[in-house]
Length: 99
Image (cartoon, rainbow, N blue to C red; front, side, top):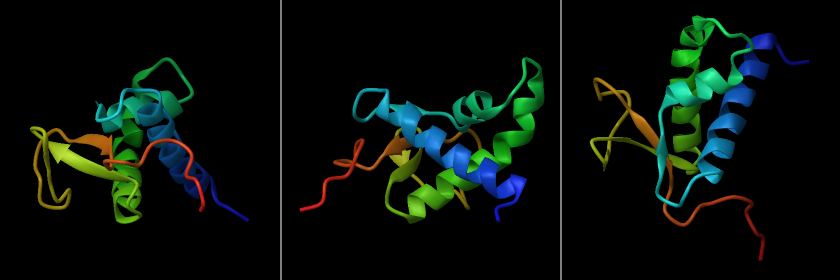
C-alpha cells in the first residue's frame, strides 16, 4: 500500500518526464512546472510541492533519466543555490526500447 506522499512523489516524477517528453530534445523545465501541473487547485498551493518536485528531480537524476542544471551547466543539486532547471539526459527521450 502506498501513502499519499508516495503517490505524490511518483506523480511528480511521471509529470517531470512527461513535460520533458513534450518539449524539444535538450529543452528544460523548472521544478515549479511539475509542481503546478500536479497541484489540484487554482490557488498557490503548488508552492508546497516545490521541495517534493526538487526531490523527484534528484531521484530521476540518480536513475540516469535527467540532469539538473543551472545557467545551462550540469550541477550537483545538493550544492547549488538558486533556480534549477531539469532536462533529459542526452539521448534519453520518451519510451525506452529494449534490444
